[in-house]
Image 1 (spheres, helix red, strand yellow):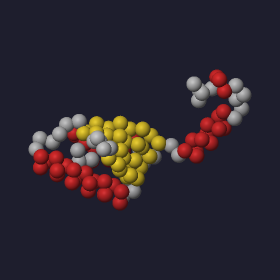
Image 2: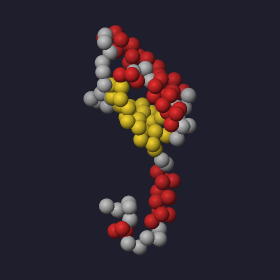
Image 3: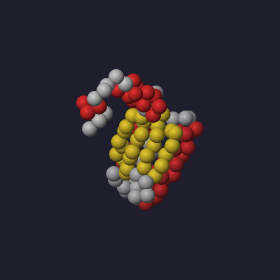
Image 4: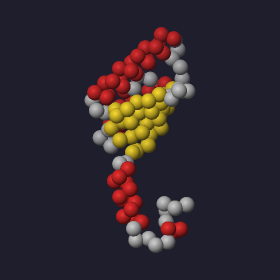
Length: 109
């Protein structure tokens, strides 16, 4: 199962050197998870924070992965489950295939 994780640091480390250590550890964490095929990608935002796409077998594994992030205790995460676009499109196409009046369908505002 893939998850889009958006996060940002909510508190700074108490010392400059600690912040540098956290960032160095975070880089190592990203590389390790990529090697383990648990992290598809990691991107930073120009104004701070960033995103991960994490591949976890369960919500519990996702929790474990996020808690292993070196600055998890200084961060806030938002998680969205991801679904394959083509598979989801096929499900929606099948669901709305017999509907003749789209004004009453949940996918149309």
